[in-house]
Image: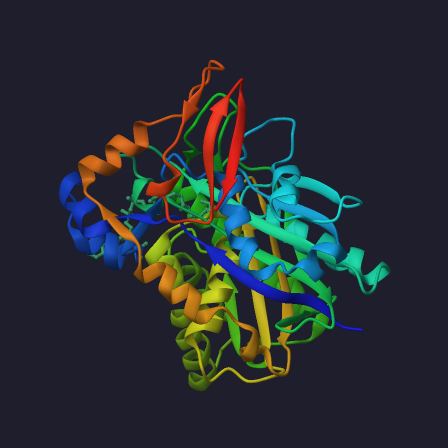
Length: 390
Ligand code: HMG
């Protein structure tokens, strides 16, 4: 029995900031953002979107009525959840009409949370064939106005339906995970914005990738040549390449292996360039990008996935493209979603950045018509958010 990703979809809010505009406003050479960091646009959520609504919007198009009856697990991976106690997955469970005898939980470990969820879901299906699990990665990446990390912000969600005999990617059993207690990026409970030691975080990411890759090779006797593509956690589009290049050199990759992996890397970063960091969904946004933009991928090819969550946990795991996978992608919807967005001027972005839902229990009604998403926050009152499905 194979187990893996049966359906896959992402969502990004309809607002974005053009990073050439941002660079100009911050007095930075635009090429630093567009070439040095490798980002073009940064998705930004209106007040009508949070991690719950974005996660539900990502899942809505792929969860059919039949799926909702078979889902036993709803897992939300997020590090920008809205409640210390109640899992956002309980709301998503309701918004999607999932059958009531299901488990709904939220998982946190920075950008690694959804990977933990995906691999837990795989184990669950192993012991419950025929059932399904919904794994959602949803986050808003905020570093603050005019900070070093500002250009690497973003917002969005990825939803994955996990089942046996999946239609897109069959996950393999062997993976290597590595944990070390470091402070490269974190967000204390009293802070809306992340704290980050930017240079150290880059170094930690690179070290974690080489560490899990070396151990993976030792355990499996596989090498770079075995892979058609490697997908990376993408806090910004250049990060994965910074980790990949030294490994290509160390492993003595041939020119054709280098060309194959670097070309596919470029396909995997296109959605991230247009959206930014979506934290725990970033790796899976990279997978969507690869599948949406690489028409020459073939059935049964092996894809490697590197998940990294600051703090830090890194994991390298793998999957094989299922025969016929290309018939089950949401490519057109993804391109439409990206093309139909609306640019914010920098003053507009700064104004939206400072907006907040009330935190004193008072009521605020929101304009759901101004947001084209299917699911929006419509109201907050008595410290409870109400979501509206159009
Ligand atoms: P910075 O200090 O603004 O940028 O920080 P820099 O000076 O390092 O420059 C960046 C690149 O632009 C450099 O290229 C420059 O040479 C180049 P590199 O040496 O890296 O190849 N550059 C130019 N290129 C062309 N034309 C120019 C030009 N000027 C400079 N004119 C940093 C950048 C990413 C550190 C910062 O934005 C930041 O702190 N971001 C947030 C942290 C982050 O994204 N870390 C990534 C690894 S940790 C991770 O992935 C986990 C995370 O997702 C969180 C989680 O797990 O939850 C973040």
